Length: 433
Image (cartoon, rainbow, N blue to C red; front, side):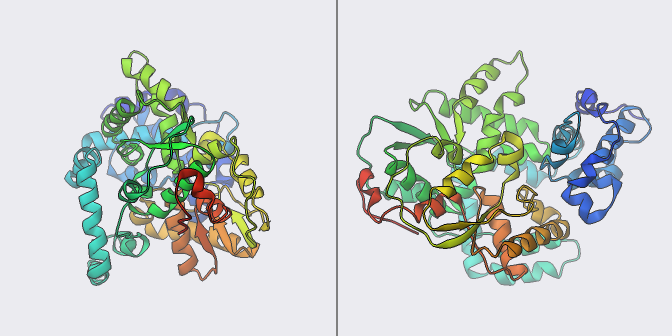
């Protein structure tokens, strides 16, 4: 039998921490849907152990269960030795990709994501197709038996703004120079799918007295990393480290929970003897999720009442990866007039997980249904979350399962509480979405 891939051997110590207790079963969203041992952390680790010991081949037959993992770290939170199953899963996925990676995926990860112009052009074309002919095209896709249902339904889930965030920010009246500066890392989804979120974020920072310096960054690298393309993830990380390391602002903020989380984890992409690791550590030490940053600065005192019933969904990358749980709720608590209701299972994954809703559509929708029923039970008019992938997924769920709720980013919710001319501090009038 072939020897186990080196990348799996590298996580052997983590694999053998598992004592088969089964606590991971209690919180795994996928296991709760499928009931299969192969869907839960204990099953993933057992599969990889058997591969290491030569009891099972490392082939396509075992690939499916490993790519079912949401990498939400719910299992880690329940695990007595705190095994980071997501790291083992990524090592396994990287081993698969080393053997076989589609040309289209390789092209996207290594040619498109590092090239902002190419990415803008591709997204612009998709947006144009959606606004014109893609509805018909997606219906045709559903008739093809070899096309996964998720990819045919993706166009309906994806926003298609006519202008992107960087374009909108370039047209804004420059804010008056201030002593305090902050660097804004623009996530791909915020820029090209939810530019109104980025505008709300910049409004908040300027209202708080900050001059916002927009970073010349590329994709953070999380998409290729999640699929196991570590080389592409490192390449994107290097480009961002080089773009961020010499910027003057002490803090680097992002309003995408996935971006801020992955930027903080950049050092783990590089070996101890790689000179880039020290630079990655220096950059990562300056990164703050915007919710984390806003919770520790002074917002305008004259926040206006927003009479609404609101609940909050924890993005996995924010809550479980970096324990940012209290800060978003504290920020919502600053808004007068809000009737805040805690969401049952607020930290359960919504099933979005990047492109998971496309690659595993049926599983994703079954996980999402549980989340939406919990939201319905709160009676909330608005559900808030600081993750664009979660926003996209929850908006899909609200429509699909008939839950009458508006889905907003945290900065959009806070922006509604700013006085009409609080952006005067930045030299311009109100620009609410």
